[in-house]
Each structure stands twice: as C-alpha cells, then as structure tokens.
Length: 317
Image (tube, rainbow, N blue to C red; front, top):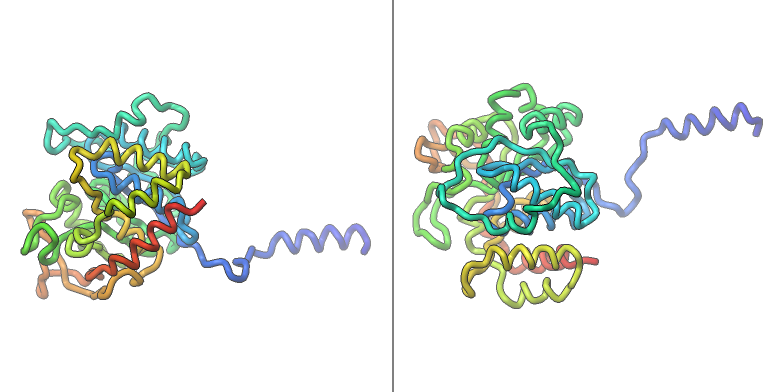
C-alpha cells in the first residue's frame, strides 16, 4: 500500500469510536457522594465500587461535618489501591452532630498527604462532570445530602442531564430497629437539601432503612474477607477495627446495598416499586399520594444472595 494511503487508512481507523469488547459488560459511570469516616459502611462501599467490573468511578465528593478530614480518608484509601486517578472533591463543612462526636477512622489518614483532594468545591465538581458527560452519569449519594441539595439549588440546569440518582436514604415503614418509620440520618441532617433532591425531576431510586437495616456483616463473613489478605481487605479491616466500639458491634451494609442496586438494578431486592414520596419538615420520608413525587423504592433485600456477591467482589485478587 502506498504510504499516503496507509496514513489515510490509519487516520480513518483512529477516528472510529471504540466498541465494547465482546463478552465485557457495559460500564456505568458514577459519582459517589459520601460521608466516609463516621459509620464504617462508607469506606467498605468505596472499596466495593473499586472492585466492580461494571462501575466506573468518575469522582468522589465528601459531605457532612469535617469534610476535609473525610476527604483525606477517601484519598488515602484510593491511593493505597493505586487509584489516584479518581478525583476527590471537598464539600462545605457543617456542624458535627452530635457536637462532641469523635470519628476514630480519621486517625488512619490524619497525616496522609501523598494524594490530595482537588481544589474545586464538591458542588462545582459535580456540576462540571455532569455537564461534560450528559446523560451518562449516575449520581450515588450515601451520606447527608448537602452536596446534592446544593447541586439542585445552584445548578438546576444539570438535573435533566443526570442519567440516574440512587440514594441510601429514607425510611418508608418499619426496619430492624423500629416497627415504624423514622427520620433517617441522611435525610434529617440536611432536611432542606433532601426536600430539593427528592422533588427534583430526575430518575430517583432510594434504598431505605426498610431494606438496609436487615443486612449485617456476620463474623464468618468478616473472617472470609480478612483471610483474603488483599491490600483492600487489609485496609478495610483496619478501618473496621477503628470503628468498632464494643465486641458486639456489627457493620450494617447500608451504603453497599445502594451501590449494589447501582451496579445491578433490581437484582438484590424482591421489590423495587414506584411510590409517591415527599420529605416533610421533620425529615420523614412520607408516602403522600397527593403531594409526593414518584420515585423507585427498593424493598425486601435478598440478604444471602447479596452477601455472597459482596464477599466475592470485595475479596477478588
């Protein structure tokens, strides 16, 4: 082939968009908004995302309380796993509740400086990423909704550009700790923001306490992960030991279930139903057929199927 034709042919090949390799699942691009560092499930949820064959993490944003300390924790975990390509953006700090709360996981990263958050504030990073990737980003929030609420308030133009929103949020009915609905933590810590997020016109799915409270990590499952001995499972076991305040403490997999729903919609629940939901002034997520907005609510978790999946994904080499 003459050199001129060879160059033209090469340019033509490079201009053709790459297609997925046969047999490889399509990847879902996500932004993860988290309050990593208080409860233990956030760090384990981040690890779950990093081991996912189908989730592509476009960035992490951090909400609630000492957001700078939370961001250092996220940065260290990402760095330990060779994922310094994932940007971490810091949300606005808020008052810790309760005010004397001590988050012992922060100690794991208090002197860490090898990988730092980006300078762009969380809400601006969310808006910029969504605008650059219209209809491609699934926004997953597993903490108080300060950042996502600010996104709705400050950048309403991005709402129709979001592919899907998945929240670990709310309490529709009873759960493992209460026979009746409660004001769930991620909602009651940011009630105006939650009201904005729940009422925004985007495809919204919630994984509430009604489901997550029934899924806890049992000792045999923890031992299986600890024995895997990977850099991820060692780091997560370290953080779990910092979080545990008594021998009987067990992690509830709240946030991991929301991310499992993101990875494989509907697989780990017996029911995912549209319900008219609104957030009231006290932080309750009410079924309201007059004023509620239709959102998808995931109920009745398939606990054993999910845990087998979760352990296999997290312990994979």
